[in-house]
Image 1 (tube, rainbow, N blue to C red):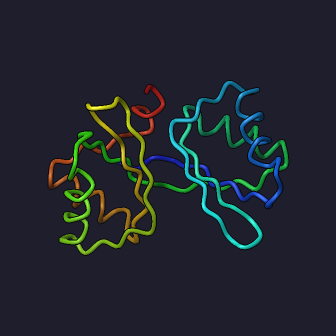
Image 2 (cartoon, rainbow, N blue to C red):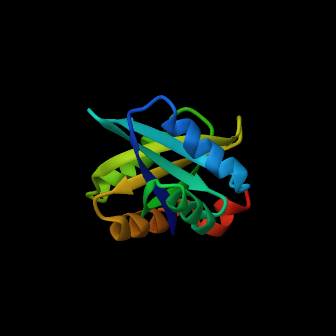
Image 3 (spheres, one colour):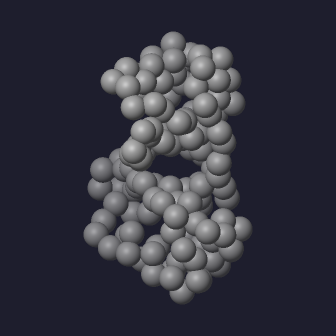
Length: 143
């Protein structure tokens, strides 16, 4: 299953990230996972939140450049080698990772890896066939 992710383009100014967090807080949006990538003149903030549509609307109304993309959310055990297991499946399936970020749902129990692959549909099939738990938007929203 694919999960909707917000991508927000931020100018390199000291207050822009804080402006995003304030906007989300004021709109009762809970961040489930985030990643920030740096480029020369701007950053790309990637967020998975509990209410994607509400967050997109609030951020857009506050002047942020926001787009929606899809990532795969793979649930993994919180133990050494979990990432390698997933990456080996990706290699065997001929998939290329564009980016990945992660968070632990509960330390020592499980985590979530958020992947963007070159072919998201093929990735879904690879992981389904392998029996890997893929999380849906609804499952992430209820975390």
